[in-house]
Length: 435
Image (cartoon, rainbow, N blue to C red; front, side):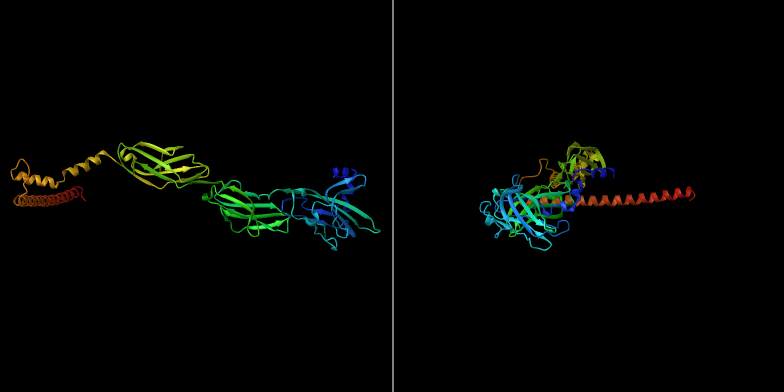
């Protein structure tokens, strides 16, 4: 409060508080962007002054205005004068009489407008435009003057829409995209569309406020959208493209498609080198750590290498393996991989069983020996020899079957006797224990 009292003594402070000192002219926005071949509308309004409607009114529009100290008045290239019969001056920009048009309404009782439109814009139209207002608001009639200007920036080509993506750090979630461009030409309405790669995104909302066309859309980003191009396109109503801005999406996500590969395979011999490699389909950012598991237990810790190698040792390395890839966003595990390390004892037993099994060659050799031929079977191809060999082989097989049957019967009888003895021993034990 103490500081406010001091402000009362500054020159002009009380005058500035007086609503009569406010400029009834309004130009918003007062900085406009356009391009060659387009048009531009300078939005201008005349409000009340001190609560009173201004009347009568005289309005002038200047290009590159300046204040003439000798005449105590604004001057410049006169574009429009409402007091003239035609409204347009002979002193104007080149061909401006066909391109410059006053589109305001000075006769409206309450809402008076003073807008100026320039069509087929050229580079020489770049500059400052000033509105000079003469009006009366009191009785007896007393004329007052006000001035307000705007700046037009003429570009050689249409500007690309400004794109804003929120949040800036993109993950697999909902993303909001806003594209906007300044545009002040009502004669040729444009639109801004948003798309991903070559397709327009659905559910877009477009608004045009104060000369700004803005389109907003929200969509869910997945890891497959990483490095795809997001675009904002300024288009005419016939969908012909005027300008375009693009942005490559940088989507952050946990590792995808993690797989565990075993070399030379999932079944190996003891003593062989086993190589395990953890591969990924995609990751952003890159994987910084790989973890290895056997039977759900962490082995060898975690490291920055995607491959480990060791000598396989029987049951110690047989089991279920998985790997896990990690980055700063998250992690993913591979599917389970069963690895069987076969020991040498397993190989020996398998090999011995294969050697003890009788073969057709052994049988034929036995048949030859039974005939007392130390030199082996005869190479004669007579039918009698062939019949003898067949009979001998049949006899050998028959004898072998009989021997096997007898052995099975004997083994069965031994098992029966053993079971009887075990039963007797159990009964004796129970009697001795008093049970």
